[in-house]
Length: 268
Image 1 (tube, helix red, strand yellow):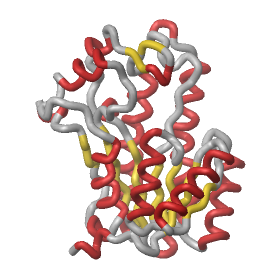
Image 2 (cartoon, rainbow, N blue to C red):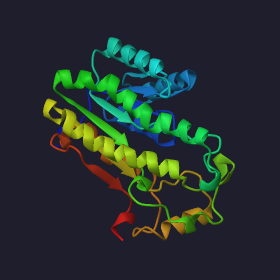
Image 3 (cartoon, rainbow, N blue to C red):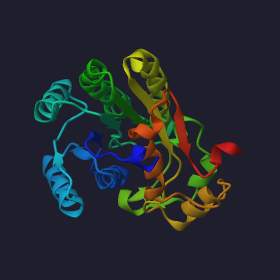
């Protein structure tokens, strides 16, 4: 059975591949044997990340930059991947963005910020899937994994943000409506694609992480953890098991599902 989790020989494309979770996904999928395409906006960061993973794992890893908010960029990116590898076995739609006014209150949230986030989180996912999914369907095999969020499934508890701070983002944090709206759309898109290409051997599923500890202050950590039956936030590595499962042949009959990895938060 362990062999069914082996990703050796599979070409895996990961958008948002240099981000907090994305970088870890790339590393762990390469360790599982996959040939990994690190995709993100910054070409130099993609190349650097790919070199580091290749050196550590000995697996083929390449960085290919893409602007998911630009249709032409996505089209060029997809052509480059298919010309180089001839196929894609797994597409992980992981990329998400934050606009300049991302943490503004709803009453002051601008349309420009709304559209900027929507362009990457939803339209960019659509474009990546539109450009790479058909090649999977033609081959009769593939796995598309769309990354959502716990706040695409339930509404955020506004009380946990009182006194919460994120050092890397330089200020107080919250979950804006645009984030929930786009992550909810991800779940719906996965279900649609599961029925659209399922008959052609392409499985589409959602991976939904709960809160991952990544630099939030102690106030946030304690308040969020109090909402979780397991009493803590997740580590980045705790998302990887479900990701490898969905990418591998171990999930060969899993299609249209939302795998929620949240420590039980949605079980209350």
